[in-house]
Amino acid sequence: MRVAVVGLGWAGRTIWLPRLAAHPAFRVTAVVEPGPVGAEHVPEGAELLADADLLGPDVDLAVVAVPNHLHTPVAERLLARGIPVFLEKPVCLSAAEADRLAAAERAGGAVLLAGSAARYREDVSALIEVAAEIGPIRHVDLAWVRASGVPDAGGWFTSRRHSGGGALVDLGWHLLDTAATVLGGPVRFLDVLGSVSADFVNDGARSAGWRGTEGPDGEGDVEDTARGFLTTDTGVSVAVRASWASHEPVDTTRITVEGATGSATLVCTFGFSPNRRVPRLTRTRDGVTTDVPLHGESVGAEYVRQLDALPALLADPASRGAAVTQAHYTISVIERLYAGARAPRPRLADEATALAV
Image (cartoon, rainbow, N blue to C red; front, top):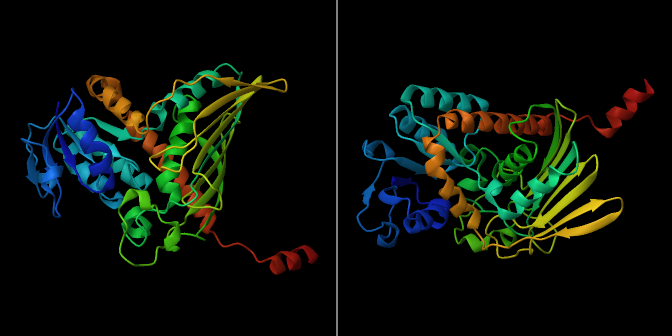
C-alpha cells in the first residue's frame, strides 16, 4: 500500500514513520510536514510536501499525526477527496467534529480508521479473554498513572486551544477505548461524573523527558489528572483515572474487570515510557488469585500489530463509519466529563447555610 505520513511530530516521527518503512505491506511514498525536515525522516523514493492538500490520488492511505486541533480539518479534507485516512488519537475534539468526519467519509467514499492501539496489546487481549469467562461484567476500573510524564511542557500539548484537553484527551482516550473493547463495542453512558486537577502540569521536573520534545517555556492550561465515574445503560459502572504525573514511583496502567463469577486485573504500562512495570495478569475467584500466563512482547509491538490489521480493515465494507461512531461515543464522554468537572461547585459554607435553612 502506498502511504503518506502527514505530520512529523513525536508520534509521526517516532511511532509511525519507522514502523511503516519497515513493514512489508506498506511503502511510504510521501511525507507531509510544513516545518523543517531532516533527510533522515524522508524515506528513499518518498516525496516531501508542505501541505496534505498537495497529495495526489495515487495515495492508498494517509496516516495523519498532526497536532490535535488539526486532526479533523486535515482528515476531513482528505476523506472528502476519497483518500482513506488512519487518524491518530484523539480522532476529534468534539461530537460536532465527529459529525464532520462522518459526513466527509460518506461524501468521499473513503474509510476512516482510528489509531488507538491499546486494544492490540497482547496483555489486553488476554484480559479480554479472561473477562469473557467471569460472567456478566459489573464494573471496570481503568487507570493510567505516570510518575512524571507531562508531554511537551509549554508546547501545544499543554495548550487547551491546540490539544483540546490534557491527560484525559491524551491517556484517557486509550482507557475509554479499552473499556469499550472490554465491554464488547461502543458503549452508551447514562451518567458521567468527573473531576480534574493541575498540580504538576507546569512543573518542569515532571516533564516526559523520554519523548525528547521539550516545548518552549510557557504556562499550560490543561489538566494533568482527570478522574471519572460512569454508568452504562446496562448498569455497568466504569471508573477512569488518567494522570500525566503523580507521586507514584513507576508509570502504571491498571485495569480491573469485576464480573459475577470473579475478577481479573492487568498491571502493566501503556505507551513508551522507560519507567515501566512488567505486565502481570491475574484472575481472582472465591478468594484465590492465580496468574494468567503472558507471552511478553517488546515495547510498541501493539502499533506493529495494528499496522498488520490495516489492509484488511480498509478492504472491509463494515469498517466504513465504525471508527467515527466509536470516536463519537468517546469524545462525548470526554466532553461530558469536562463539563461536569468545570461546573461551579457550592462552597462548604454555602452548603452548610442551605442545610440550616
